[in-house]
Length: 145
Image (cartoon, rainbow, N blue to C red; front, side, top):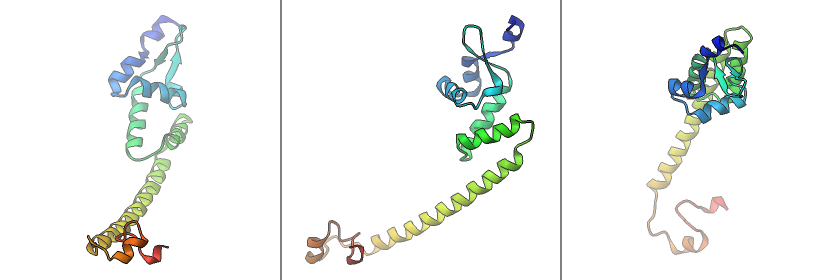
C-alpha cells in the first residue's frame, strides 16, 4: 500500500465521528462482512476505510431503522456490490415488513379488546369458591383448566 492511497483512507475513529456510530459497532459490521468493499487493512493491521463507507453506513442505519435485519441488509448490499441497484428488493422487503406490522397490530388490537373485557368485569373481591380454585379468579376461569 502506498502512502498516497493511505492518505485518502479514513481511520475507524474518523468514521465513527462522521457517522455517529460507536467504533465497536463499526468493527462488528466489518467482522460480519457488511463493510467488505470499503475496508482494507494497513500493513500494521489497522482498519482503513474508503470514503464510500459513509454512504454504506448511512444505508445500514436507515435500513435498520425501517426494521430490516442485518442479514437482510447484507443481502441487499450484496446486490449493490454486484453492480445492481437493490431498490426492487428493498421495496419487496419493506412491503413484507409492512404486512408483518399489520399482523402485529391486529394481534395487539385483539389483546387490547381482551384486556378491556377483563378489566371491565374486574372483581376486587371474587367469590370465595373461585379464590380457592384459582390464583387470580379475574384472569382465570373454569374454561382455562
